Image (cartoon, rainbow, N blue to C red; front, side):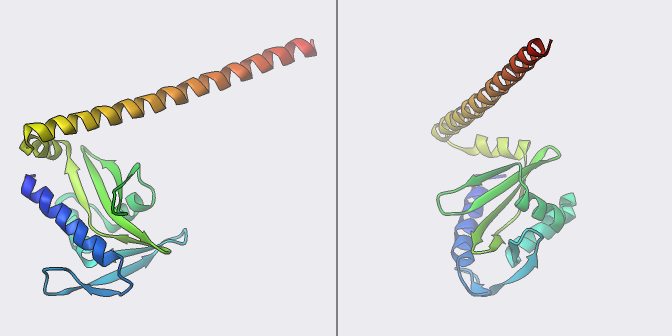
Length: 182
């Protein structure tokens, strides 16, 4: 995956964000001759999933290459392992799939979740993309990854500590309760 591909992807996301906020079911992508139509699909918890034509086309490409179905994409959208919000209101739902990461950017508008695109990144693709960055960008990426890793690790340690305290209180309570009942 090249830097040009990533830049193109980000440009598409920004354009899709603009059209996703439109109230119309048909809209024109900047720089494109044809309009996109929305494919609507409801799901059980009351949020309506809306597929842009671009997202459906990307999903079909990934289905041909890796067997990624619409149901799988919707499952990631509705129950992701992680959601990364960006500064422009796009939510990137992602879950691990095989040796890669299935990413589904979407925006929530009212009671709808509009799927903007579908992307699958393998570890090797991510690594190759990172190696295409300048040294300064690579250093920044390393710092961001380290900070996120440390934050995740602190959260995990805090949860473990809380669990240990809870277990200790329960054990103390049950020991005290047994002594009193004897």
